[in-house]
Each structure stands twice: as structure tokens, then as C-alpha cells.
Length: 160
Image 1 (cartoon, rainbow, N blue to C red):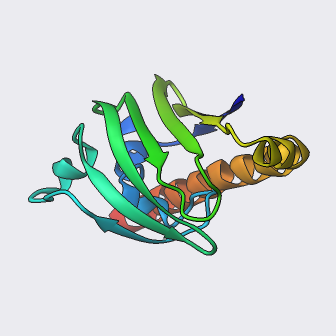
Image 2: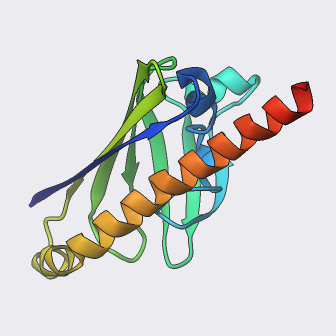
């Protein structure tokens, strides 16, 4: 079974600011996945290395652990990664894509999650919990917007 979630939101900052929050270790601050810890498993020499194709990390959630790898990266435009090796959920893979589009009022971020669940029990659980997943997904994008717009407002006040 291939499932899909997609949500978009407009954030009142430039794509460059949104891009910085897409680094795996920054997603802990706002991600709907409930990430608790991100440990890069590939070499990170500069902050730009966090967005490089092939960058990998081991991620710990409250009830899961998995590996993640960046599979597509176009600076300030698009970032795609793949989660795999779920420890408790069985053979589940997930691809997450963030698409940034500059707008006059800021940036539209579209987040797309595609997941595959070959196990029939997991498929049934996924169908039942899809609505909860969509709500959590939307909540995380709103949290991202709140973080970035509050930071932008603080910067304006500091600059005055």
C-alpha cells in the first residue's frame, strides 16, 4: 500500500530562512514526527553538508528509531529524504519532500509524505490513523511558521 499526505502553508519569510529549518537536526524543533534526537551518521563539516544528497542520520522518536537519507536537494527549493529500517513497525518506508516556492508575501512550503506498508496489519492501522496524521502534519507546519515568523519579528524589533 502506498499512502500519501500533502499539506501546504504560507510562511512570511524568504525561502532561505525556511530552508535552514529543514536540516534534520532542526526538524526536532517542529516536526510532526515527534523526533527526539538526530545523530548524523555521515560526515558533516559545514552547515551546508546537512542538505547534501547522501547525508544520513539515525533518528530517535518517542517509540521508534530509524535511519534517514537525503535523496534530493535543490538549495532553497526542494529537499527530499527517505526513512527506512523502522525498528518496531516492521518494513515501512517513507519519503518526505519539502517544496519551497517564493511568493511576494514569503514562502509557500508544501510537504509531501509518501509511505509504503506491505504488512496488512500496518495498512489497517494507517487507514484508521490517516486523519490524525493529517492533523499532526498540519500542526507541525503551523509550528514551523510560528517559529520563523516570531524570529523574523524579533529581528525587526532588534534592527530598530
